[in-house]
Image (cartoon, rainbow, N blue to C red; front, side, top):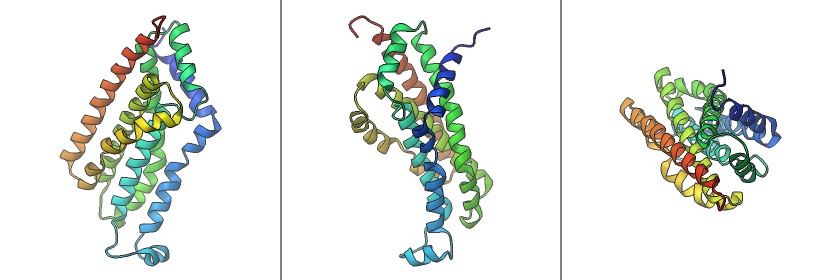
Length: 228
């Protein structure tokens, strides 16, 4: 039995896991969080030298950095900035392959969930390391991962929509993406540390991701017109 979107998932795996640039981008998570944790680790020599005023909470710093990096990478991979000629490849796929636009978006979304899980796995050890010194518990760590994961998926769908609509060079897409990401990043949810704030953030991010996916499917359908 053919599973809808499975062919797209396979293509996405080859694209994102077969490109050296795409694989190197994954290092942003452990390198960024490792550096952040090093700078704010209590009583560390480097932190003591650089500390000015009250010491920042390690858990909050790692949580915020994880969300920002997840959103950044989600948008980058969603707009396929790490794939050569991504806009042209997507255009050819829509016009010449016998795959419905909704199935294309579904396949990209399924792979997006798997790829986001990989990003969270790379960041989870640093969240765990910051729990005790930051005065947080495991539940709060899971909330941070949930917020980061939902925000990453939302940014990924936004990146895909921008790729479809703008069809320009990466710099042009950045001009559109960066302001939207700056407004949409759920920093307040991870700093608040409350179940209500986290629940609202995750719910809104996932709802917006679904809306963006539906809009992208409609935009892809429009690309199938001869004059598109």
